[in-house]
Length: 374
Image (cartoon, rainbow, N blue to C red):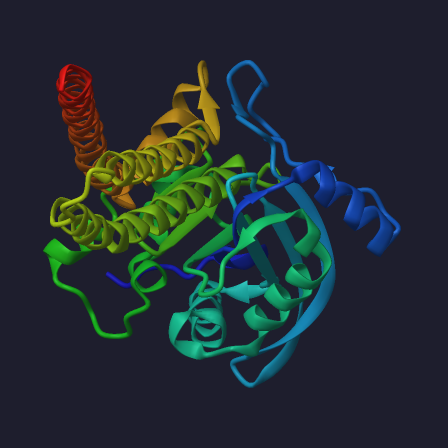
């Protein structure tokens, strides 16, 4: 039996790109710089539907409304609104919102895939580079150690607010095929692939629906904007930042091994100083990474909103955030162990130096005593 094709009256396709632009961002400085540049006050982000006691940002990011951009979508030039959020742990999250109103369901699905083709990872669109350059130019004084080769994450959302002929979540599932929208594939998928793609489904009311995948999501929310959009952005920001520190530690560990080996091979009475200096360097690295990862972990604080907490936890698991976090923790543990070993080695070398000094003093005293009696 052929599926019906409901009509999409009010919707948008949101393309996100999150970029690690610095080790940290001074959000108070961001607000001041934006007020001077745009002559308007920046806003601190907050969740719309969740009560503050139920779910809130750990440190609310600064939300900036940028100038609209024109995007070539399926051979048409469309005006898209642009927003940027800056997080204190160094991530800039850009959202380009392309309107998708008064379309058949098939055309809406085509619009989602067209936006991905125009703004996705493989598109090479200059839009993201232009937005990043704009933010970097304005906000550079607020950035601590700007990234020279920033990492990024992309995510795509189909957000529908008004859909004709659909009144409940169950009828939505029956009347529309979400698989082409979520997969971006034009060829039919196997039944197992379809089930896997639709596994992460959530509803709170009888007429809303959220379906998550690794790089896309579908949100049906008749009551204006959805907090799920913000939650997915935070989860992607956490993934991005943990990826950055995972790669940083991957680069740091071989250097650490080389330095430890070089220090071991130095035969010097002052080797204790070299061990202590290397231990301090490793301790500083561990402290910096631990501080930032704690901020990342606390980017969103969930207490009472069970529904949003489930969506958030599922997004983190789907994006493999816990896996990357454990990898960072393992590498930090290796560096901590190396620090402890170096500290003990430095203490041992200092002890050996003290023993040598005592022996020298004894020898000097003996020589002086012999000379006096000659």
